[in-house]
Every structure is written in structure tokens, then in C-alpha cells.
Image (spheres, rainbow, N blue to C red):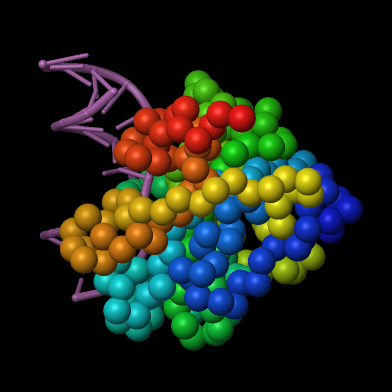
Length: 221
DNA sequence: ATTTAGATCCTCT
DNA sequence: GAGGATCTAAATG
């Protein structure tokens, strides 16, 4: 989608053919970029992800090898997008990982907004900047991402959504991990620490250890 | 600060 | 027909 020249100085995104649990923490610090229909760029740094390896993990949409029309893109090669609709009103964005047929994906849960912020504010009217893309559905709203972006191939130069490495000169912060959100009834699988976030970032969702309460911790120079 | 309920509709059984 | 990888506003301590 974007060349490194076009974006505010960023390198290549990490290899997406690895398994979801490996890729998820590596996406932290990377730049998610959206080119709006008018050509404007909107995006930010990824600060929170969750791994959904599929297979025996019952919390994944691809659990047990289930193939449905909805999750078709999850089964594609790493580097595609899986965008799904939930709760009657929300879209959520995943980056597919692994080789074709593995059914793995990483849910992108939160961004630290970096550019196109005015544009995000327009779509998230009434909300403070901190909440522009704090949470998977808010993120999609801020970047105007919906079902039309399902199945996109990230590396396609014409793709309206792109993934780049961390902005140059920026060292990604320390990575913390914990249980994934919103899948409590999946018992033991819910307890796996497959949620990853940038420690100390105020743009991370949730209200627990990784959420607002973490403010102040690890944030001192 | 934390908890609760309601919204809202697509997807799969 | 049930339930969902969520969000928001309102109520409560």
C-alpha cells in the first residue's frame, strides 16, 4: 500500500507467516495506515493485540477447523485481513498470519493515533483523543474500516489498508501480556496469556492491569 | 471508580 | 433461535 517514502518514515512490517502467538507481540509498535477514499492518510502505532491461533483454541473463529463464509479470509495466507461484524453493530480488524490453511489471526485492539487525527475525531465525535482507537471496534470506526476491507491483501500496492514497521528512531516499548478479553466462557483457553500490549501506554483498552490503572507505572523517564 | 443494561443484527445450528 | 473477540450511558457506592 504505502511506500516507506510516503509514510512518516517507517520500515517494513514483520513477517506474517509465523504463528499468531509469535506475530502478535511483534506487531506492537508497527504502523497501521488507512488511505481514505479521498486519498487522506489516517493511522497510528499499534499498542495492543491478541493472538487467535485457531485449531484447538475454542475462542477462535477458526476453532476446530470450521470453515464458514464469514471466516473464509482467516484461512488465507498470512498478510490478508480478516474483518468481521459482531454485536449487531461493530467491526473488528484482524491480520491473518501463518501459511495458507492454518486459520490463524491477530486481532488489532488499539492504536496510538499518529496522523489523520482530525479525520478520526470526526468519526468519533464527542470522544477524547485517548479513546479514538482504544478498543477493536473503536479502532475500526476511527479508521473507517468495515466489511468491505475483509479479504484484502496488505502487500497489494492498491490496498486501502497497510502495515509498516515502527516509525524510525522509535524503540517499541516493553511488551506485557495477559488473558484475552471478552472470551471468559472459554475456560482454560481464556486464561492463556495471548493478549499483548505496550506497557505504560495510555492508548491500551481495558480497565484491568493493562488499562487506565496502569497509568504511571513504567512511564517515568 | 465500578457495575449494569441495552443496543442491534449477522452468523451458524 | 441463540449468542457474540464491544461500546456507551446511566446508576450506584
